[in-house]
Structures are given as C-alpha cells and as structure tokens.
Length: 304
Image (cartoon, rainbow, N blue to C red; front, side, top):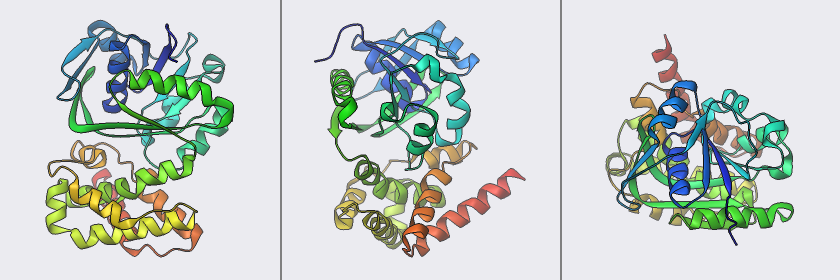
C-alpha cells in the first residue's frame, strides 16, 4: 500500500522527468526536482505544466533546487545519458542515504555505472515508453497515447519498489513490476534501438521510415534480437516488427529530436552499446554498425 507523505526527488525535469514529477505531485506525492540553477529557479517560481491528451492539461507547484539536501524515499533519474555523470553531482551519496535510485535512462550500461557510485541494492532500473518533450523549462508536452513504466525489483527492495509502483499507478500511468532487469532493459532496446537509429539517420518520423527504410528496420530488429539472445534474453523479432508497424506514424524518437535541436546524441548509450555488446557476444551486426558509424561521423562534422 502506498504511504502518505511519500517523498520523491526527480533528477532532470525535462520531458520524462517533468512528466513524472507533475503527475506524482498532482497525485499528492511530495515532489522535489533537481536541475541547473536557471531551470530550478523557473520551476520554483512557476511550477510545472503538463499538456497531455491522456492526462489532461494542468499545473502543479513543486520544490526545486540544484542539489539534493533533504531526505527522500526515491530519486528518479531522468536525465539523458550524455548528462548523467555531471548530473549525479546533484545527488551526493550521503544525501541520498538509503533511498531508492531509479534510473529511467535509455540503454544498458548506466545501471553498472550507478551501482559503482551508490549502494548497489538501492539502484532499481526502470524503463518508460512514452513520447514526451520539454518545450521550455517547466512546460512538458506529452504527445503519445501510451505512457507505460516498468520497474525491476530484487528481493531486498521488493516492498519499497511495490510502494513506488503504487504511487506511480495512482497517477494513471501503466506500471508493471518485473523480476528480471536484464530482460526488461532489452525488451525496450530491441525496439528503441532500431527506431532511434533509423529516425535519426533519416531525419524522419516513424511513418516516413516505415515507407522508405523498412528493410533496414527489419535488419536492425533481427540484429538487436540476436544480441539479446546471446545475452540470454528471449526476443521474438516478429513481435517487435509488429510493434514497429503499429507505432504512430508521426512519432519521433528523442534522439531524432535532439539532433534537430543541435543537442548531443545518446548514440553511445543506444547504438554504441548495441555494437559493444554484439562484439563481446561475437554477433555480427553490420547494419547497426553502419548507422552508428555514419551518425558518429555526422556528429563529428557538426562539431567542427
């Protein structure tokens, strides 16, 4: 059962973090967001606004600062992988204490990084499937009909994870608690990886990619499924392909939006991780390698 006066801090109130913070605050959770000084100041003064066909348009007040100081029950990490190392300075180990640390990052390898920096058993991986963007500090636009969260729970923290899940369910999110974190992370990546790489490479939404790059999409999904299988995760590539076929045509990946905005890409966390895990498993992934290499060269040219 969800306790009253539950306290959550959200590191990174951008698209995902801002949506989670706004929904939790509306549901009665005590929410504290951590961000850079200017963003924290804007949110402290004006609050958070969520615009969503699923959850409605609303505004809430939350506390905001650039560094965690008070005790909390859970810290949701919602920064991009490219910002993770620097963002963690806002969450000192002694300030976090025994709170759950719940990363909603894309990819696979951030979990190990966090477990080296914080008490290992308190790091609880999670995924979220949603299309959402921050339009300006404190203003979040949720554009997909879906918003689904999965959280992996180990025995030492099972009760606390269930408590967090109950609070998230109370917001209206679809929430599932899972036992196998590796399968959970791969289940997201087998679709996210191909979508992110193709939409970013083509500078096009999912509908346009389906029309012009369907063979590449199928090849990518088969490659990622093979890597997952080599790591002990059972994936049905045909089921993943059906999800790709049914995704909203106007959907864009967050990496594609970052590229359009001139921001650093999560290429290492998504495509780079796929290539690295494939190499360790001895799995050939030529299409994935080609797209990652071409996107890296594109980023390098833009940096000149």
